[in-house]
Image 1 (cartoon, rainbow, N blue to C red):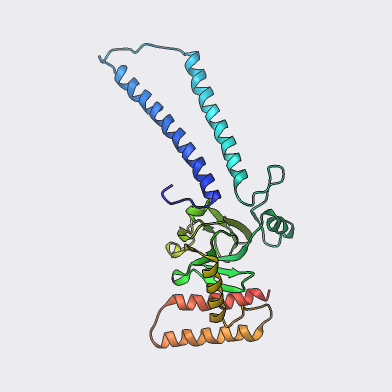
Image 2 (tube, rainbow, N blue to C red; image 1 turned 135 degrees about the horizontal axis):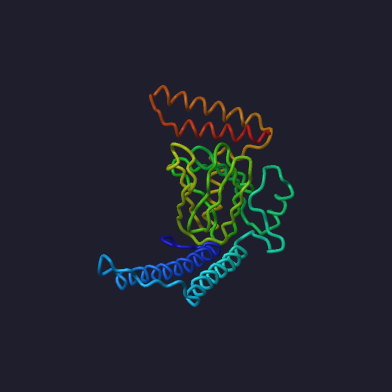
Length: 290
């Protein structure tokens, strides 16, 4: 791949891709070589020349039937083996459904039992940003204004993804595969013990006019840096996260957002990022009451 693969999932996927690419290149060279050889060797020398008529070659026909079939079967088993290695897949006899309808509690329970997880983050796909909610830490964050998903190094992180509007897709190549996020469904991604670093991905499904802005920036930091960031985020958000039924906190978000947006309009500031962020905060609070 053109980006570093830093998790076990990404390394497994990249290994399968490298094998497939190698086989594809070998087949391409053989096929194109034979085509060029035939075109040069058997080029018509006279306008009235009739080429030699061969009505079949059993050995050749067996070769180009058996060898491709063997390659396809081999790739099938390699792909199945790679899928079995990925985080949270369960077993061959009892696979885990990484996408299920919202409200399917049985599927949700199996997801929670699939793999030990250190950090759980709810991710809402919106037009056109990602809204993050850290469950245990009790803080919220957004990808707007170059906002990064902050996670600790060496830990297993699970992203619980859903879409609030249209089809989105979470894709950070360094962490592994691409997963679609459909309205009305829950999708799950495990980031398994990533090293420190800065990684970037892109929503891999066209989701509207500002699709290009829907980047997935991830910053992996040390545990100490992560704990410090959580404390600062809590202080920034008033010390506590919005809780279900917290009418006072919800009203304050609504009023503050209204004042900020009104002030921006008065100054002639057409920064839609501010409007979208305030709407997102209010929407998140309203959704918590459902």
